[in-house]
Image 1 (cartoon, one colour):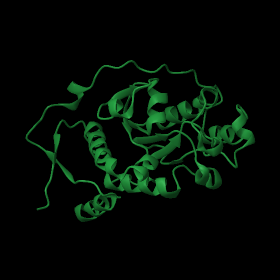
Image 2 (cartoon, rainbow, N blue to C red):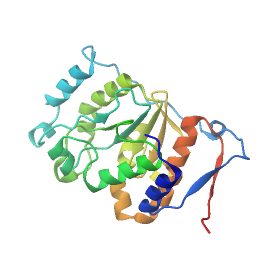
Image 3 (tube, rainbow, N blue to C red):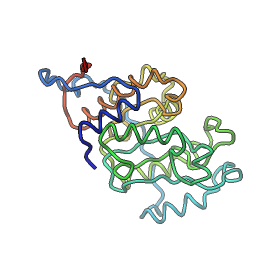
Image 4 (tube, helix red, strand yellow):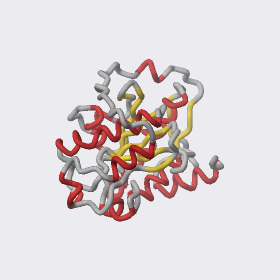
Length: 241
């Protein structure tokens, strides 16, 4: 779905963020400013990961960690199985655990608005989490849980073969990039994960608590779009006055 400029501006205003436009006069390539970062190791994939149906069944029946005893249901992920954009959060929350869908509730609504501001829909991208089960009381994922569950995500990445990965939130970014760097250091640059470009953005739940950061997120989304399109145009604020 392609949004009109009027509709796009409507969503941006709803997010409470400043509108930006591309400055075409500057043609410096973004790729020249991308630091050369180490690529995360690619794990060996299980031999029975031949199809989405097989993988979904494996996730549904998974008992690799103790979260299988506390979950209502697994949250496999959803969207376009051939998506160019893959958004990865940390773990399902209460609403996700109840519905079996990623990013629902208030945070999910905000993520949908963010996608629309990028002229994308949930049907065009794929949305997943590092963990497929909700940690009790929405606590941070434990290391053993991440290790037990990560092969499912790696299989999803291999099957989708996205052009761009977006790590949604600090824990997702730190886990995928194997770093303890803060979001302030991770945002605004293109990283590499399994030879694919990765952008880190704030989690919608964090934005609900800190609305002022929405302006930074829009900058990050624009940066992701520029990187995706291979453009090197810088951003500048656009005044409506």
